[in-house]
Image (cartoon, rainbow, N blue to C red; front, top):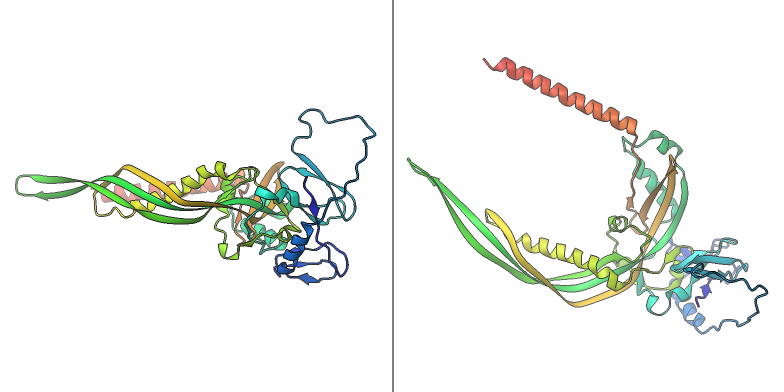
Length: 363
């Protein structure tokens, strides 16, 4: 059974959370700051705590119907006693009654505990500013969207990722040709030479990221790359306080296909680029064998912003470390038609002038 963990300020008793600005735990009530190393020992002590066992018989004989409670988990807030309901993949959240950040430690235990985490570097204010900048300069964006746009929801989420390391031993074979042409007084000549070209070698790949959440679109997560691994630190639950966090629901085995696809394309592109000096090149065969393959489970910071316009939902995501923003914007159909009409008119005018000048030039 998962337990909830809260971090309390020893000075005032308020709930403390990770502050991305100072890269420390900070109390929002008395502004006391705590080093992450201090809380590492606190995490170890909490593992020795024993839960209360106080069972009561239910007064009602009502029960969930088969499948009705699948994927549902409930916890009791240690600050106010309120009930926290979440799905089976939630690892960090906040109490809906008192707002205190909590970490569901049981969701991260055992095989589910991350190896490392990249802490948030940018806060909610930066995410709002990034969305505004994302809308600037978009000529076909509806003016009303920019003027009346409001963010319905904004949340910082730690997204589960798998990092793949491997050495790719690669062999490629190509069929290539070279053409030589010359002429004399009577004929034009073409000589075609055929070559069998082989390439082989090894490429080391480190930290190929694949997101492990079905909730997040793969194209959105890949668009937020790259993450800067120099900021990656050993995992501590304290980093999750004040943010949401999901555990993976796509395991490492299921993620191998996407990792292999990325490695295969990068390796093939690297070896293809070495085949030069030929008129034509055709790939005949190739093989990639992975050795020293390792995988790690990590959490990466992402700000998610939801907004609505014309009864449609729009999702924007910002890399919580680098500030890179991605997301599709609506298009003003009227402005698009005017732009297309104007472009067509310009092309028509250019063609008219070109044909007129050609008419004047032809005798």
